[in-house]
Length: 157
Image (cartoon, rainbow, N blue to C red; front, top):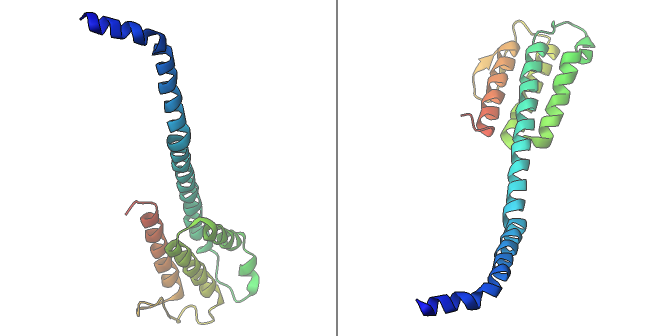
């Protein structure tokens, strides 16, 4: 027991140095490893939130754009809902995954096809799956595809 007490007496002057070394080592570990990792995780969470808002906006604007009356004129190109849908599609190209980007493009094309088709009422269109649909049905089919791609990317499927 006397040896242990002597050992502690020898270490006593170094205890504050040892505490400082442990504290600075912990601070260096946090600065070098933990903080950058947490910043990266925070950025991923921020991007995920931005995607969720953007994707919701795209889907909501689709619902508005699909309601634009089909006419024989080019006025549909100036419709605010269709223009906003096109803008949102461009924004998604900046942050979305490849599948979401492709599905957004196809959904926007389906809306354009709906308005450009002379044979709107009798025409049909295949979305690459071999099934023929009216232009309106194709737009809704593409909306379903983009929704599934968005859910998959956001981890909801």
